[in-house]
Image (cartoon, rainbow, N blue to C red; front, top):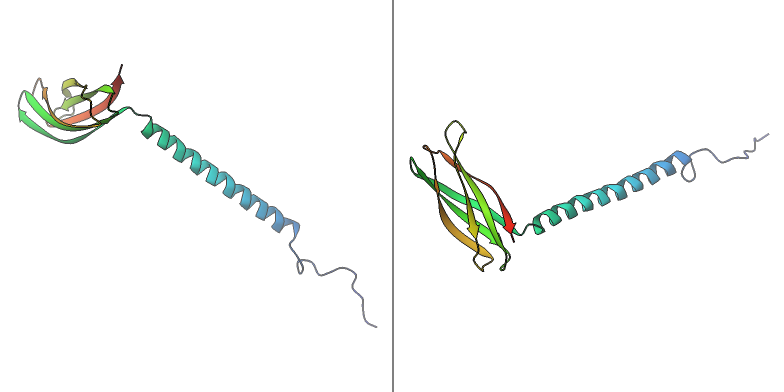
Amino acid sequence: MAAVREALPEGRYGRSQDERADRKLKITGSVLGVAFLAMIGWFGYDYVAGQDVSAELIKSKIVSAGRAEAHLEVRKDRDATGQCTLRALSEDGAEVGRADFRFDERAERIDEVVSLRTTSRATAVELKGCTASG
């Protein structure tokens, strides 16, 4: 006599409950991962676009024991005014000079060489940051 099967072989047709749960978890994880990356991208864009005045130290030159020069490229809105802080460092890393430079020009990009007085010989010039005024 032949045996008659009532149920289908397990795992042969369709997906099991565990496979369905795994697929749902993978989809949920992918959606949350994409949302997290989009949030990080938005925060980065907002940080960069939200700055009214930004600058880049192109190069610096130690002119003498009492003076250093820095070439700055400042980017800002045409009507914005701002100031950038520079500091001069000695060989051991101590601060030997600090100055704020104001940029009032009605331009979006300003390329300027500024001079910084120092109390002793500097070996490096560092841009601390820029802020918008008014």
